Structures are given as C-alpha cells and as structure tokens.
Length: 415
Image 1 (cartoon, rainbow, N blue to C red):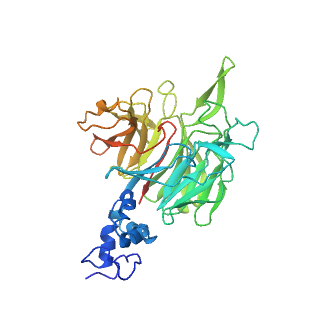
Image 2: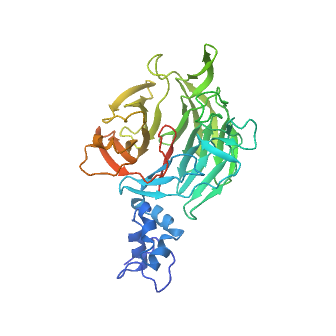
Image 3: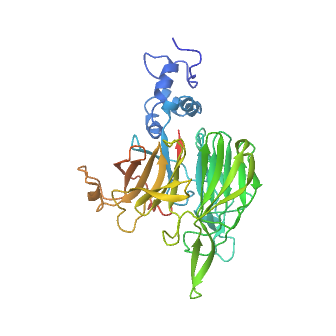
C-alpha cells in the first residue's frame, strides 16, 4: 500500500504507464533515481518517459527524496554565452550540456564571473568583459549582470543586476535563506596580467524579492579574493580571504600586485538579513611562505564538527586552522599536472576533487590499461580527508573548446 504522504508522480496521460506492472506513483519514484545527466537520453525510450523526464515536477520529486539527488560538478570552460557549460556526475561518469547564456551582441569575452547554486537553481554573477560600444575598445569593464538557470524550464533568466559591477570577487550562498553575498572585486580581465579597478563594496541578493541591497563595505579595496560561508551550529559567518589591493611597479614599468595575507569576516544574523561589521583576521602566513592564496574549497561536514577549509597550492593541499590562523599541510597530489597545465579544485560529497585535462601523450601517466583516443581527457584525483586516502578516475571530455583550469569557473549543484 502506498502511503498518502508519498510524493505524487508528475501528471501523465491516463493510458501512459511508466513501468509495466507498477502504479505510476511507484514508477515515478523509481525513475526519479536515474542520474540527471542520463535523463535526456532516456526521453526517446517511449512517450510516457518523454513526458515524465520533461516534467517540471521531476526535480521537485528528486528534492523530496534526498537519496535520489546527484551531487554534480558544473564547469564553465570560458565565456558562457559562446561555450555551453557542462554538468559532470563523478559517480556515473556522465556529462550533460546546458544551454549557453543569452547572447549580447555588444558584449564579448566574459570571464572572472562567479557561479553558485541554491536548490535546483544555478546562478552566474558579474564578471569582466569588453563592450563594443565603449572606448577604448581594449579596456575591460566589470559586469553587473545576474542570470539564473532554471532547471524546471531549462532556460536562463535575467535577474536584477548588482548595484556595483564587479568581476574577480568573493561570493557565497547562504543556505535556507535564499541569500547570496558578494564582496570586493574589480574590472581585471584574463587577457591582462595586471591593472584594472579594485573595490570594497559588499552586497546581498534577496532571491525572493529579486533585489540587491548594499551592506557594510570591506575595510579596504580587495579584488581577486575568495569568499565562503562558515557554519558552526546556528552561527554563520561570511569569510573573505586573500586577493590583492594596490599594485606597485618594478623599475617604474612592470606592474606587480601586492597580495593580501589576511582575511576579513562578516557575522551574519537572522539568516543573513541582519549583518554586523567586518572583523579583521591577521596574516595567515609569514613573509616568504607563499606569494598569494591558492584555490580554496570548504567541506561543511568536517569530522570535528567544524567546516574544513582547504587550499590547493601548486601540488600540495593545506588545511586552515582557525584557532592558530595558519595553513597546515594536509597532503600532496599523487600525480602532478603535466606541462604548463594547472589543477582545478572543488569540494564534492565530502571529498576534494583535483582535476586536470590530459592529452593523448599524457594518458600513460594514469597507468590504466584502457586505451583512449587522442584528445582532452579529464583526470580526477580524489582525496578523502576523513580516510586520508586518494583514488582517481579518468573520463573523456565532451568539451569542444580548450579547458584551462586557471580561468575556468566551477561550482557544484544537487539535482
């Protein structure tokens, strides 16, 4: 007997049966466990499956059953208006393309934007680009645009723009409150090694109201910084680390950034609606230890009840100790990135994913017997902080454009 509290199946034609021999409620529940990247291919199986896997209620059904959700990686290889982002399921090793952003005939070369997810929605915020209507044409400008990909309708929606245009900024989503926080940033573009503007403004986006609200600004200008949320019980804080402020020149010609070694913290009250002032944290490393902050990821379910904050610095992984305000080495990546390539770094399902793209000549380093065609192949090394162990996986990349993890934008989403 099916309980009345069981999720209701999406509406289908009365004569359509999802799985022969099973009520449609049960059939819908079974099919909802199909990983998201595989659903598109199953639509052609029959009419009832095409209707079910195209239904707006499917994602709602999956979110009502947490065990059916997949934790997916979303990769933006370059300007999302010309190159489609891709979802990757590391468990089923399946890829799924998403539609590109709506094009703007006047704007091109978007980079240094940020992507975050809240529930079944994916957001693309800000960035730096060139505008064909501006002068001079080679001067990058910051963007204030905000887009949301709605998986219910399978399309991008344009939302209210940020108050201050920005790229290379800190950003964090506040779970269970439909809030997004952004801080700092500037106008620097990937085509230029230095220069560009810096800013200290901070904003909060209210998803329900579709509006941006200004908050207390950072203590000083900060661009190229990293932002994340720290949760300890009911207490929440928005951390902004690293980045650069002013720049200096060598011999009066070559611009060099002065990178920060500290962090600043904003305490969040009332689910992020009421925010206090910024608290400054001292230097996290001594002069000479490292030049700048590496790539940062956060694991919420740390074994000690505290969030695990990890940094990838070249081939080493460090863990941040809040009490000592220091970075301590956690592990080293077993296989280094080949040539001049770099690593991508993301937290997913309680593990740390270190990714690089290999070509045909690099595949021998994986020591796998399976032969791959020449071309880009994603090589992922996965570290489990709880078990202190490494494992790896290899998957052919479907991307039709070069993937450079130094500039690619990544986030994760539960679908």
